[in-house]
Amino acid sequence: MIRPSVLWLAAAMAAPAIWHALVTQTLDVQSALLRFLIAVPIAAVMVGTLRVIVESYRRQQARDEDTADADASTAPGASAPPIA
Image (cartoon, rainbow, N blue to C red; front, side, top):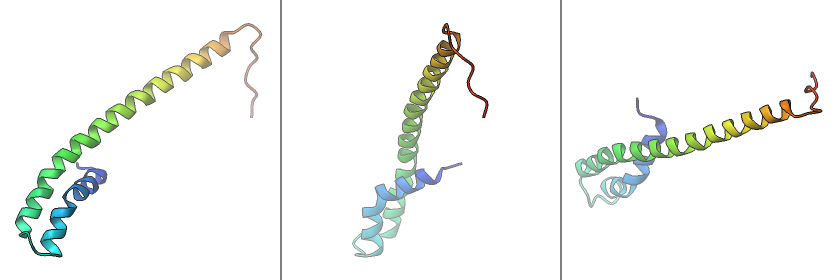
């Protein structure tokens, strides 16, 4: 399934072609749609790459927080967290 963010990015990438096809009519509609269809897989790769990069940072942050929590709970004189 294609994410809406991919379609929005593809539409932004193909916006000049769509504009020329629909508003100024200096480009035929088939060419604009072809450019949009070419932009969809390119946008999917771009969004997927961004998600992989962000996910790796999120995992590293979660690991660092788990390590800090484990160190704090095993430190001498550490008290239990308050019950809310």
